[in-house]
Image (cartoon, rainbow, N blue to C red; front, side, top):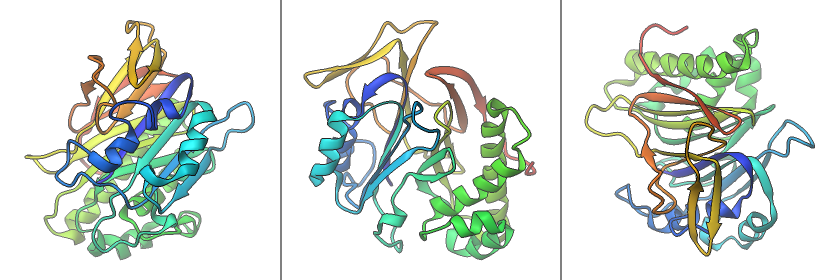
Length: 288
């Protein structure tokens, strides 16, 4: 399983999330606390937005471990953004360690990352591909279950482009989950799926903590407040309250800040411009 962190809110340096906190994402790449295997050394990736320049996010990926990549340390020290997702990878057995398999993935203004496994993926891969549009299929560059899920999500985003963006993203995510679970039920057997995910367009974000396993769900946490601050490795949210303007969603808490709370299992959190717009339960049924 992988580890990831997402931030949206007031401008911060990327290092405030991935290098400076006591339990930063780079620390989690070496010593994750909430998974059996603590190492996540099969590559990393960043997607961040500079909305004053353009709507499409920038990507930086590498197959090297995050803890030893000097370029990552240098870039995170000086890049400032209002929206960023960062991911450290532990490759699922059988999947190649390659840059194309590193998260996040992007399409147009959208960026996506996933922590977990889609149950029975090898059994559903062919029928999944047969469902895709030519655009979504051609966008796949790697071999992971995550990127194939993103391809389904791309088709849902295309299908639902008539909706307002605050409806489009969560509706597309819900429909994509239902379509994948339906494929698993038809072709994939009884393997469980673990799908912690974030999708964003830089303004709105959907974070998901979902599993079909009644006994286990991968960890996911939320922290929100007025401003996220790091001082000498001590990181915290300032002045939490009604008018929150910064949100951090992370596989594990980045610090001992008491503001961290667990995202409910089988739920979806909708974030807009650094504030929580809505929280929704995920109910499976027929796909939309």
